[in-house]
Each structure stands twice: as C-alpha cells, then as structure tokens.
Amino acid sequence: MKFKHVLQVLLMAAVLVGAMGTSHAAQAQTEEPPVVVVRDLTYWDATYTGYVDVNRFEKWPVIFSETENFSVTATPSGEGLTTLIVLLDASGTELARGSGMLTSSQPAGNYFVQVEPETGSGFYDLTIRRADVTPTDPSSATSVEPASVKVGESSTVSVSLDNVPAEGYTSAEFACTYDAAMVEVSNIVVTDLFGADSVTAINGPANGSFIVAVAGSNGNKATADGTAFTFSAMGLQVGQTSIACVARVSKGDNVLTELPSTSADLTITDEVVILDGTLAGQVLAGKAVTVSLYDDTDALVASTPANEDGTFSVMAAAGTYKVVASADGFLSAESAAVVLTADATTTLSPVTLLAGDIDGNDVIDQFDAMTIGMSYNGTDPAAADLNNDSVINVLDLELLAANYRLTGPIVWP
Image 1 (cartoon, rainbow, N blue to C red):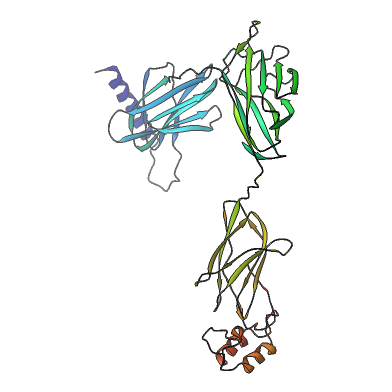
Image 2 (image 1 turned 90 degrees about the vertical axis):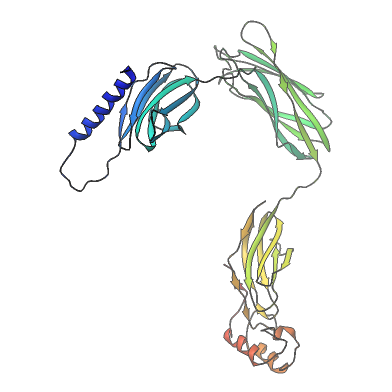
C-alpha cells in the first residue's frame, strides 16, 4: 500500500477513535463549534494530506520572510467533498477566501491557511506554490484631480514614484513643465516618501517650469510606491494644458537614472456644471395637481403637473428646497428643507390634499360655502367644483364640510 494511502487510513482511524472516545448517553446537547486542528506546513510545492468534516477544520501555519505572491489549492481526494480555503493573519483575522483555490500576495509575517468543508467531508491534498509575477519597471506618474476646473479654480496635482525596487532610492529629482499662460502653480508640498525628515530643494516655479529635489536623511530611502509631492494648479484661461514631471532617481551610487514618466492633462472651462437631483412622490386629490420647488428666497425654481394617479417627478440642481403641492379649491401641502442630491432621487411620502379652500386663503370656512351657494348648479368658478364633475352642488358642499374649519398649508411628511 502506498504511503499516502496509509496516511489517509491512519488519519481516518484517529478521527473515528476520537469521535468514539467522546461518545455519551443520548441527551439534549447544544451545538458545538468545529474543532480546528493545527497541522504542519513546511515546504513550497509539497503535497500534504488532510481530512475535514463539519466538526473538524484544519489550519496550516505559513511564515513568510518577505513579501510573497502565492496560490493554495485544496483538492479533494474523492467525491463528496468541496473545500473552502480561508487565509488568516496571525491574530486570526480573515484576509481572503476561495473555493478550492486561493491566490494572494502578503508581506512578511505569520499566517494560517484554514481548510473547511464547503460541502461534504473527506480527505484532500493541500499544496502551496509561489505565483508567477510579471516584473514591472520603475516609473513616475503625474495625476490631476479634478481633471477639469473653471477659470479661477484649482486642481491638485500629485507626482508619484511607482514600482520602486526593493533596494529603494536615496534621492529623486523631478523636473516639471506646464503652460504658464494656462495655469498658475503654487503650494508645492513634499510628502514623507523619503522619510519623515527628508531634505528638500525647490527651484521655481517660474516661466512654466520648476524643479523639486528630495533626499532621505540619516539613511532613509524611498522603499515603497507612493506620492512624492503635490502642488496646486489654478486655471487662468479656458483651454487645456499638459502637466509633466520627469523623474531622475539615485540609489546612492552617485548616478541619476531617468525614469519613464507619464504626464496629465488639465482642462479649464468657463462653464458652470450643475448636477441635477430628482424629486419624486405622489399627491392625491380630486383635481389636477401642480408640484413646485422654491429656493431659500422663495423664488420658484421648478414646477411640474402630477400624473393622473398623482405621481410626479421633477428635476432641479442639487440643493435644499421648499416643495408645495397645490390643486384648485384644495388646501396646499408643503414640505420644507427637502434636500436634492446630484444624480440621485429623493422620494417624498404620499400626501392627500384637503378639499374646500375655494377662495385660496388657506382656510376652509363659511365664505367657501357661500361661493358654492352663489354658484349652485353652475360651473364657475372652477375651484368650487371640488369633485370635478362639471357641476357645483351639494356633493361639493359635502366635500367641503368634511374639512370644515381646517387650515393650510398642511404638512407634507
């Protein structure tokens, strides 16, 4: 019998004996969490055999002395088991998971690969391998946020070092150019990429160019990717300009090496870009309803008629508004401080308008009833035809009476 099969038999025997040794007389028990068995994982590319079921998970310790890109597979030895792989840090916090296979990249440290049964139970083969990583050359990049501004507004420009080699850089020089007629550069700020107490020299800006030189002090280096410095670019006139910062770096060998550098474009416009929000809801009444939006000066901003079922949708610039729903002969409904968010829909609760305010003074009283009396069996004024059946009579008076003495505008929830 092959050694692997013997190992499986012995492991299954140990599992069964453990289960028999802990048997008890039948009694009510609370469900216990699965036992997590710590195994021993020693070599890359070797295959290890394990066993999991609903009561038994297995955890394999992994120690990295440097950053590793790796893949883990847990292949069932037979039918009836599908595996779940969970990557944990030293404190047991989950970092990643995968069904049957997991690929990850982690810095130096202690980790655990935990194998659980996604379904079923049985033996599995575990393998951990280094994953192939395509080498990437060091470079520098310039980015602009936002990429479009109005005249007089500023954008933040970030200049970064990317794919920094493991040995790091002791210093870097960035020669930046831009169109001085289009933008004004200010507020150059160097980050701590070369250490918290790096030494900086800045020449300019003047005539569309400047130089930022930075070196790590007391043995500090730039050993990771990140932003080396930022600056502000204010738009001076409408158009577009390229902003480029070319980097040269040193590894402490008295040699400056130019890196491939990516530039960025800044667009300057005089157009005011207003992003709209949408207001939606439903207003119930026996007549046509109009929904209006007012700004904080009570100026009308937008208005729309509601549909026959009372639903409506209206767009306006993002901001805060007073919303009023009105219908001829009805008390209006009002909702204050409704906030519209750009590219989003704000929905108000349904509201029902109250019939009877024929003279439009926000009070349903005897004067409104008198209008019905004076226009009895007629059609004018239209506000007195509360049920909208083209005749003014006792049916309209009945609607008015149901809301007698009420005042408006009513609160729109």
